Length: 175
Length: 293
Image (tube, rainbow over all chains, first blue to last red; front, top):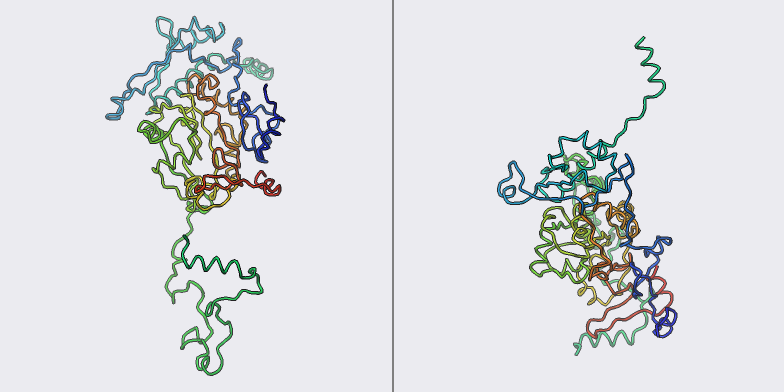
């Protein structure tokens, strides 16, 4: 027979109140003060492991989400000065993916990328980004991700149509 | 058995009346009379010494050095030390050293690693009385860090948070006021004092924003927002966020202290008796209310 919460309290007579654990799966006996998280955020589920909604990319609107299982990351040694550290540690990051078969990008974005950033695309059709800016592999990967997003955002950028006043001014200056 | 002196003292305590203002007196010679010396032995110089500014009642001001530029005027104000007495410093711990401590079995990974666990390695000297707030994690060696930990430190940078979370661990930054920090650094010495575990105080004004921010993984931040920030950081640093729910140490990784708690599993108000291996808990409602406030 499962003991419900009020029954547990009565039978054990504890001075500690039961509380919801952060992951909501088990009753855990823990201390709750007046400034515990459930009192500061009463409407929240207080779930650290809450699965997040992956934002969608539609048309020219790139959501910013890059699925890491769909891109290939390789590490190699960086160039430049640095002695033993640069000779031995793989800090250079090579981030690539096949542009034409990337489902996480919309067809419009892929087309724009192919035209605007064709210098970053290999003959096999892989978009390649390299980074060896810092001494750390992780920070270089962060930089490569940033570069990738920058490429996509600049390719996706559609300049706004000229304002009516600007068209009028141009027409007048040409007369 | 207690010594004779102790027995005598305890016997006194048993038979003497309660201490009150009516039966207290300072030790002879402890209190000096403020009156000017007069008469046979207070005469001649009347407590004013010989000659000089002291006898002539024309005293030199505090800090005066008989003409040369005094110490307190020799050095101009410097902006760099403004407010130094209000600023906290932290003992640095780089990720490479943390990994080395784990690899050499100096630090356990099967329990949540907080300031108490780190202090037990005896590799840090943290003095709360010298305005030290605890331990801060630094960026160096993040590439070598591979452990899955439930970390609780006092300060951490973004790259450190990313390196902990990419390995499937969790990290929280938490504030400890000086008294709580002293207790947390050496729990055994604290329990031997026989004092009730105090409530941990909330951060001061200049730090409350830092500890309430989900981006810093503050202990006062909303865990749902922290979950979102974990996702965002994983995207920023280019790794797949490991699922904690499917991890075997899920419970350990999600274990958190209440903001008023100093030790895992122990509440404010409890007295830990190491000799008899007993925990004494208050039952008075007023005390319970105070310690839970």
